[in-house]
Image 1 (cartoon, rainbow, N blue to C red):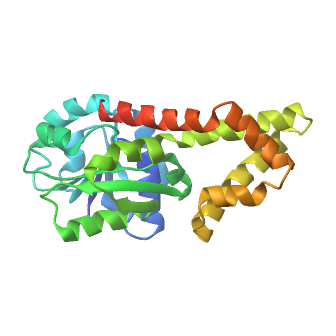
Image 2 (cartoon, helix red, strand yellow):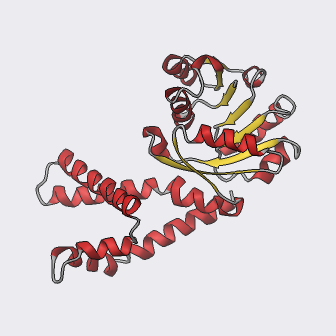
Image 3 (spheres, rainbow, N blue to C red):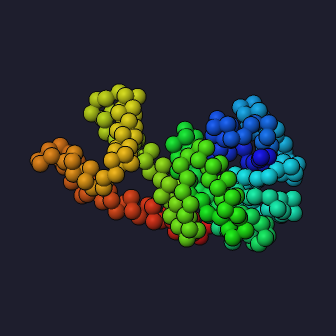
Length: 263
C-alpha cells in the first residue's frame, strides 16, 4: 500500500509511527507533504519517508490519502487535489469536517472515511471514532480499521455521533490534564515537591481509568468503594459536588460538541 499524508504535524507522526512500528507499512512506502520545511525534514529524519512541498506530487502514486491538516486550510487543498485524488481511498482526521463537507469539496463520488483520533495516540493509548461514506467498500473499511488500530483503539460509529466523539475523546484530554495539574497544585500547596506531585496525580488518573476498563464496573460503584463512611474521600467528593464539578464537566463536553457540530 502506498500512503500519502497531507500535513506533517503531531497526529500525522503518531499515525505513521504506529503503522511503521506495527509493520503495516514501511517508511519508504509513505510520502508526506507540508508547507513548512522544518516539519518535512523532521518527518523524513524520523521515519524515512519521502517528503515534498507539493501536494499533487505527494498523492500521485498513493492508494490511500490521509488529510491531517487544520480544517481552515482544507478548502484550498481540496481545490488543488480534487482531481488528483479521484479513485483513491481518502481518510480525514480533521475536526468539524463532516462527510458532506468533504464530499462538497472533493466530489460526492469520492471514497471518504472520517475519523477523530485523540492526542494519547502519540503514546499508543488513544481511541479513534470513524465512519465511512457509502462509496467505501467493506474491505476498505477494514483496511482503515487496521490503520487506525496501529496507533489507538478504534470504533466505528454513526456520523451523527462524530461531534460527541470530538468532544468526549478528541478534546477531553485537555480537561484531564487540567485535573492532573490542579491535583498536583494542591499537593504542592501542602508540601509535596512539584515533580513528585505530577507523578502521583498522573499515575492515579491512569490507574483509575484502568480500573473502569478492566473491571467493567460502573464508575459510581468504584467511587463508592473509595468513599469510607465519615472518611477523607467522601469529604473531598462533597467539596467537588459543592463546587459543581459534575456540572462543569458536563457543560464543558456538551459545549465542545456544539462547537464541533457548527465549525
